Amino acid sequence: MTEELASALMKYAHLVGSPINLEWVKSVERVQQEIMSQVRAEARESSDLRELLSQLDSSGKLEAMVRRVAGEIGDEVKDVRKAVAAALAGNAEEEGFRSALLTLQAVARAFAEGREAVAEQSAFCPLCGARSETSFKRGDKYYMVCHFCSYVWLQSSGKPTCPYCGNSSEISIGMFSDRQRRLALMKCWECGSTWRAILDETIRAPAIVLPLIAMGAESFRRAAEEAQG
Ligand SMILES: [Zn+2]
Ligand SMILES: [Zn+2]
Image 1 (cartoon, rainbow, N blue to C red):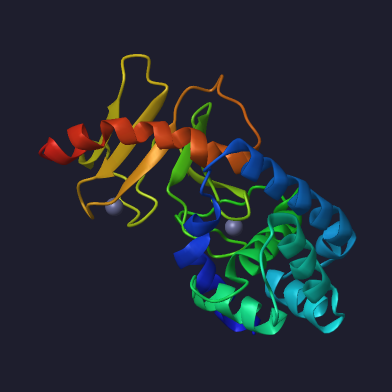
Image 2: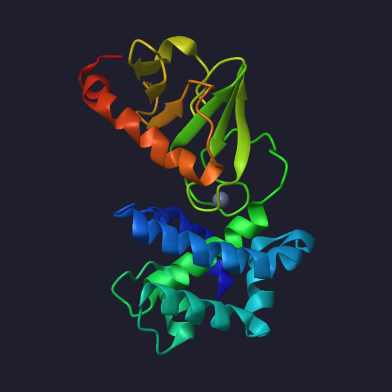
């Protein structure tokens, strides 16, 4: 069942992070932290997220965790296997979809926790495969942060490069920002991709929150769309 994990997470990670209201965010965070503390030891020993999930599945822990999440968020889950399959396939209409996806995310977060930032010239999370649209800057280094598991990896050094096509020519990468250069919408004129960047290094927050902060860069989208490369 875990085979489709990467592609599913890639496509549907954004469905998890809808910050509709603070109470919802808090209760999700509470139950995810609880799950993370339950799987932390196993997650640290594991070298592969898919393996970790199969392990949790066969020991029955995954089912218990999905039920725990369902209880917390008031979700109806009759068949946990179906719910997990729905989460992996992105069937948001299926019963238990949200509980299963939030559980998978908690496991992925525990897996990502404390892992060193590898260098990976890509917008796809080296750990879970989810597609990131968020970068941040530290010194002359540009990091990407995973929207799903919050893993951080080093995307480029010295200058921003396109995480989608690898374009490293400065003249074909646009940066749309305010005067203070806190947040920016980046645009690659080679492949047409855009991504959000947190340029202000005084902006510090847990990695899981960075993609939400970076959403502020959406205010520059119109400028980016109207500009000619
Ligand atoms: Zn990830
Ligand atoms: Zn590109």
